[in-house]
Amino acid sequence: MDTQLPAPHVALVDDDPDVGTSLRGLLRACGYRVSLFGGAQQLLAHGLDDIQCVVSDVQMPGMDGLALLERVRAIAAAPPVILMTAFADDHVRLRALRGGAACFLAKPVDAEQLAECVRLACAGTG
Image: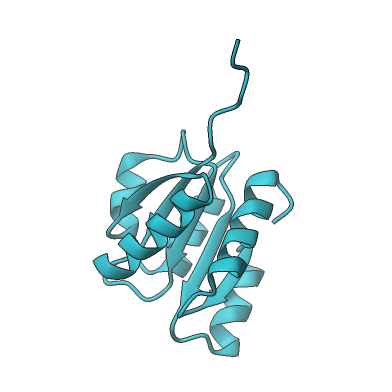
């Protein structure tokens, strides 16, 4: 009898399809189930019930990653949120971490660092 738990489900939010596809492949190779969303509104429309971790770009049209973080954190039993951006200045990093981000990464994202952040976030220690 197989009693293995299902792989954690990660929501990946990035408006750049190439970046999203690349990071989805990386996270799948680490054993995660990954759903790719082209923007924050798409993720919120999908809902967070089956999501164990959100990985989102900060700079996106419409709702940005910081606003998404705020919306997700307002939900009871919200999944942890990891933010990433190519524009990683100290002000944005501080806003993200003060807002409750589990991790803040600069693009281009280091594969090992992303994998470790997601692992810790899914384990509840991110």
